[in-house]
Length: 125
Image (cartoon, rainbow, N blue to C red):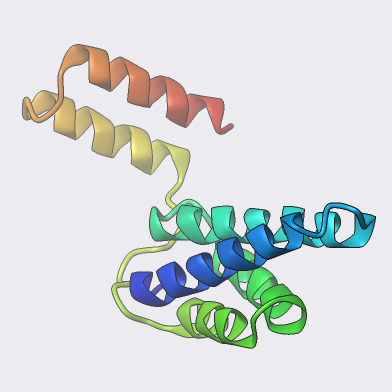
């Protein structure tokens, strides 16, 4: 997915969420604010390869109809783009652990960092 488009969609989601937070006297805008911040989180996870295209597309559609049309458009374009997607978007746990072990064996990360990252990967199960 295109990280630039994801960033633009993320920014618009955050701006929309902040605007909705200022309407604190109504419940519905607070619910929309929650989903805007959730959309921003999904866009961030997608930039790191931890969210699927379907999630980005879904929140893009949400942004398209609730907050800023432009944010939704960028999220949908990012979900559909093929830039930098030679590898699968979401790696399997086994692939992540193998990659981490390779980094450790090559001395690119310390034992402590290896243990921390390994724990995070396993916690996602």
